[in-house]
Amino acid sequence: MTARDLPFASSPEALGFDPQGLASLDGYMSGMVESGKVAGTSTLLIRHGRVAAFSTFGKADLADDKPIERDTLFRIYSMTKPVTGVAMMILYEQGLWRLDDPITDYLPEFIGQKVFAGIADDGSMLTKDAIRAPTMRELMSHTTGLGYGLFDVHPVERAYRESGVMMADSHEQLAERAARIPLMFQPGTEWFYSIATDLQALVVKRLSGMSFADFLRTRIFEPLGMADTGFHVPADQVHRLAEMYCDDGAGGLRVATDAFDMPINDYTRPPRFEGGGGGLVSTAMDYARFCQMILNRGELDGVRILKPATVDLMATNAVPEAVLDTTHPLRLLPFSRALTFGLDFAITEDPKRLGLVEGKGTLSWGGGGGTWFWIDPENDLIFVGLIQRMADPVSGEFRIRARSLTYAALTHPEK
Image 1 (cartoon, rainbow, N blue to C red):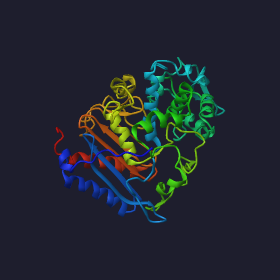
Image 2 (image 1 turned 180 degrees about the horizontal axis):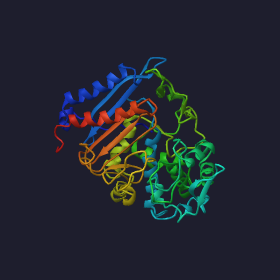
Image 3 (image 1 turned 135 degrees about the horizontal axis):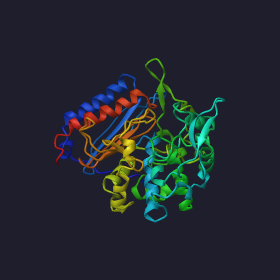
Image 4 (image 1 turned 135 degrees about the vertical axis):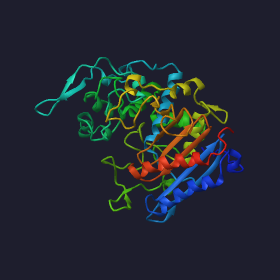
């Protein structure tokens, strides 16, 4: 399979962008490289299906002075999640599962799982019965009550880490370990970022009879021309893999050896298991092709991956209004009726209420290695940003500034 590019516009102006505005975006990115905040950046901006700007700055590897190229491979971590969601919806269209089915129909490991009810005097967790099993809708919207083991914020989270849930050797072992730990809350009553998408990968395996990697390759990557996206990097392409960095504690960078207190993935060989929540490497153009398929409501270059109504379903809020109308310190993002979550995507429902100028219905998410994307259907716009810095306030700043500078450069949003 050969990677395929999206077409390039004759000029940014042809797509409604001010070149000087886009130069400000480039200036910000190159400035962060020059200041040593990041090793390199790759940003790709698309409108009306054509490339308005594709810029790279800095180094893929500081040790050998290797520059970032347009085909540099990045660890995209949780940008894997929307891809997993599309895999799930392919099977949904085949009638193999329904949104309000209990997850135990497909993940029987979770039958009879209890719910956290406090801490006993001896330090053990108290539990109570679940009102019901979580549903598939809740699995795809992080409202099941499952944990992740990445955040030291709750006894259930700590139990996930102590049990090595994310260090499992297979999807099946991950499910078995998680099922022995109580849910953090009653299903559907709160939002917490979780292993849900890794469990979706197991569901895909069980319903399709294929390995998760083979399913993604044959049903998504090959049809979309995403030749550079996968769970490991072939030996003859390892030279294209960007190094990963983190804060060295002194205002600079050091090579990251772990991610969320776990050894960093070695993408030069197949992984222990193909993580649906964060296992992929990709390029800016490959991921933009995936985003363009979503923006086109399921189709790209004459190839249909999902029906329009199915993409619309993914882009519809799945979090109960009772959750959106409250706040909770455990949430990763301040979800509300203005910022919601669908099926493996965050959704900007009311940008003006959030103080944003992006279009209503913008879909987005990011990865733990600093990568991010958004898909704006109202402005027919896609942005993919790739850096190599483990998630922290600096990598978060990139996402905010990239959005503001991009829309500042959009002079003709009606085109």
